Image 1: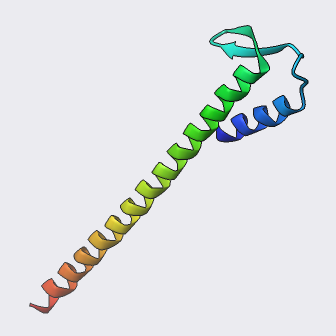
Image 2: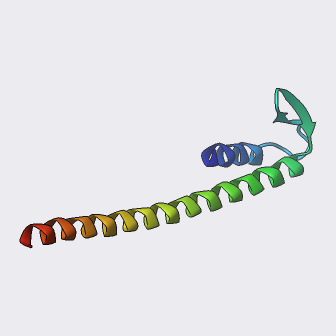
Image 3: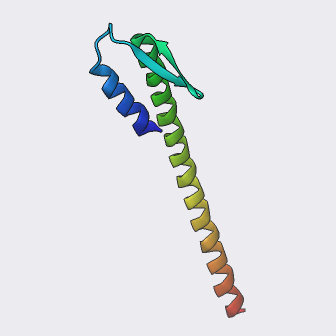
Length: 83
């Protein structure tokens, strides 16, 4: 989705201000102003970027927690064999 928004913004940059622009709304295309479409796409791009960063942080925390649990299990297994 992020790459789609980036590609659309890039193509939109190639279009003149007076060109006819259509944006997809559900199953139909609606005539829109270039500035409005650019603003909407920029906002979507920012939202997608924030979501990606949030998911990356969550992934890091989950991996760290999994490693901690793995270490605890390993310690319990080796500690249980010694006793």
